[in-house]
Image (cartoon, rainbow over all chains, first blue to last red; front, top):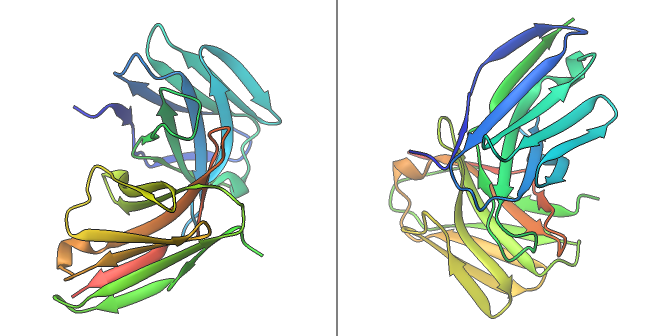
Amino acid sequence: QKEVEQDPGPLSVPEGAIVSLNCTYSNSAFQYFMWYRQYSRKGPELLMYTYSSGNKEDGRFTAQVDKSSKYISLFIRDSQPSDSATYLCAMSAVKTSGSRLTFGEGTQLTVNP
Amino acid sequence: DADVTQTPRNRITKTGKRIMLECSQTKGHDRMYWYRQDPGLGLRLIYYSFDVKDINKGEISDGYSVSRQAQAKFSLSLESAIPNQTALYFCATRSLAGEQYFGPGTRLTVT
């Protein structure tokens, strides 16, 4: 069983929809949670970075962490065609860069105009 | 200019050939990483380096080697390429705060 599970999709939504992307994990030591966005033929770019449980909002994006359920989510409000990309969740046990990140497989999202 | 650069961006090579992928960064980070990305498997760590004298194996290091020539340079070598090493390869750096920054990737095809 993988440490981090993420539905690969593909997920297709109309422009303006609310998108929910999710990951589950099995390692209770994970405390730092990240979401990366990867456009086709590009490297992943950091989108959101959260610690422990709770919500973090940045513009149209909200990251949510529920450590009790070992479940994290990324919500995209008023989705745009430019949001079409693969979204990867990542997590680590320790904040410092000495710890290794464990990535989900990525969810491919298409927002249709 | 990009903070993390990779060369080449695309490479086709034959089975048995030696190939080197290069990575340079201008972010001033000590931590550098090499990943490969495959459909259905996501990003998997090959090697990582905490500084010039500190090299560590990742989860899939067999068939690969690395060299950290300087703080800014970290290269990945395939000593004898095989077809199942066909993948997208990413170099990354990581800040002390834990944020990871990726290069644009190298698409490698081994025939």
